[in-house]
Length: 88
Image 1 (cartoon, one colour):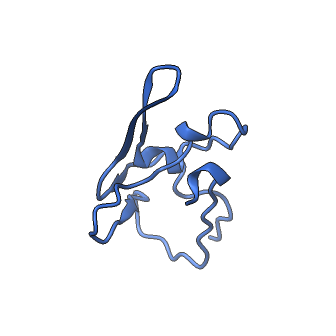
Image 2 (cartoon, one colour; image 1 turned 90 degrees about the vertical axis):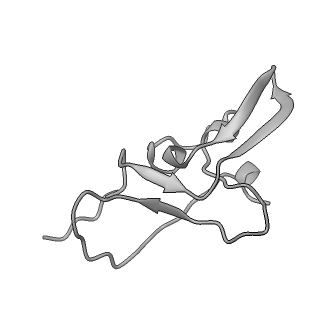
């Protein structure tokens, strides 16, 4: 069976670290980029992009992100998209 949708949607995710911005940029809230943000299905609205990204700390180590698809799949294509505020 060939599935052309998002196999990762809503699945369990992990990443090496979670980047948290302690600077008050959004009305007093600390902003954290959790790995689950990458598979929550939310698309950028241009306003809340800080809550729609998965991002790791920049600590000199090799960063990683992974998802448990729940079962074995043969994957031919992977698409990664990021709002402009998530890219540095």
